[in-house]
Length: 173
Ligand SMILES: [Zn+2]
Image (cartoon, rainbow, N blue to C red; front, top):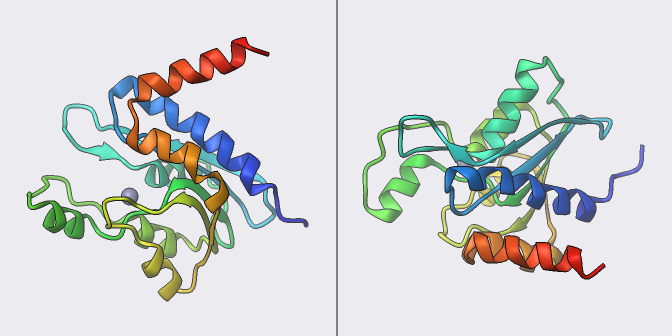
């Protein structure tokens, strides 16, 4: 089976990321998982975990949903706007604070689930990305650099301004 159009799927991931906007999550992150035959099995987005200051990462959200529906993750492809994280402990140390909720890092979760390929747009600007971890553990990685400008906007800019821009773009058609 032919590889899918990753750029088109990444555009969809950006739209999915906006679902987290209702929880005032920033940056917003969106993710799609395909099985080994490139059939879509789940979508995930970064959102607030109820009653805490912690967030559920988009990759974990999508992997949980795939598992809940008994979809086959082995050999699959994960597409994400932002490179998956390295370790929560690293994040805590880098930023100099302790976090209450220690989860397995998304990059480790991806390896353990048997996903074979990760397609991402933006490198983690905070320097805690897990692409090197994924590569070292045998996961193929594809960096869609040409699309990362739009992704950068949801990572760095005011989410409201991007929403407004999108509305205006739509209106001009
Ligand atoms: Zn993560």
